[in-house]
Length: 135
Image (cartoon, rainbow, N blue to C red; front, top):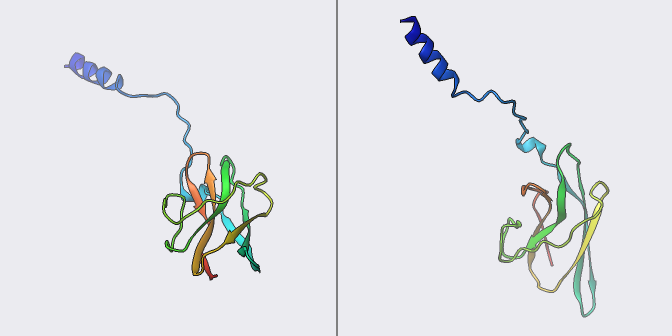
């Protein structure tokens, strides 16, 4: 009987993996915060409307921002990098700790929906609040 219980205990132990594993946090709190701080627009005769977005990204330990820009659309009220029609990622910023600015020229009239984004090296995306303006 003791031999039988010992055999069962020993066979069960061989299935356990006792190797140490590092756990990386994956909660949404690890995403950096993207904030649009200013939007300016002005008209250039013969060229349309120029809009400048100024935005900032908070840093998060062990999170690397790969790309920074603005998504906008006249057809999609929630523009994103995943939207293939009507949404455009505009630029990559080199210095992510300081406010960055991106200017675009708009030729179509209508309502533009926009938000800034930070694309992380692991493929996740953090967006600013959605906003809009009429051109």
